[in-house]
Image (cartoon, rainbow, N blue to C red; front, side):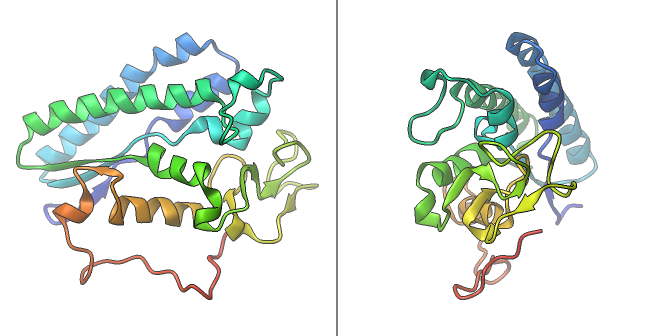
Length: 228
């Protein structure tokens, strides 16, 4: 375990998805966040005590850009949406709230375990750079699901991806969203590249470790990423 790179989660997604989709008040769901952070913190403490030295702790993705959330909380009030990305602002505010509390706790844990590398993975901003400039990364669709049922975001709660009546887009590599909840392999590739090669970890992975000879993510320009 001492030489392992441990990825913690992402933890907390379903703890928020279920109450949100059951239309629980936002304040009620926000009250769950400290409990989720405590669970993450306890798991990190336990692993460090068992000998773990390098842990990557992901934050939450921008759930306001998810086709499932965009479908469930669809509104005619344009002010609820980000004009550039089409994502729901208040849901992304929630993701940022979770991520801020998580980063605060990781700061405390770093002081408690100075010999461990506790690394925050900024999934939120690594993903948002794609939503803000999709064509830069080869994407044509950001908020619509590649696989799903009829609806403005190609997401239907009654006809989800894989169920009878669902359809799949012709080229998943040009979509950010796979099934309205999970992202495509192409999107995760770009997020991973942002973490490994870019500024989306605290501290920065590419300053802590060299990936040139030990690990590198590859993508053949002439070969499309396969999605499932």
